[in-house]
Length: 62
Image 1 (cartoon, helix red, strand yellow):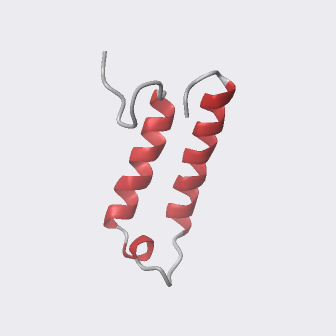
Image 2 (image 1 turned 90 degrees about the vertical axis):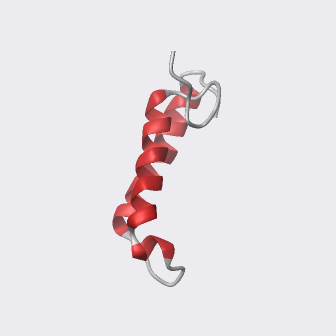
């Protein structure tokens, strides 16, 4: 069994969405600048929030 990136009780979809958001923001100048906006970063965070909601509905820990 593989350990979750976010801790016990997290599902793979939530972990994957969080990792995608982190990986993108680490290499995106717009994501690191407080005065700029990044549509890709925003979409990835939205996907992460959606995965969290789905995990909660399915009875997972968030």
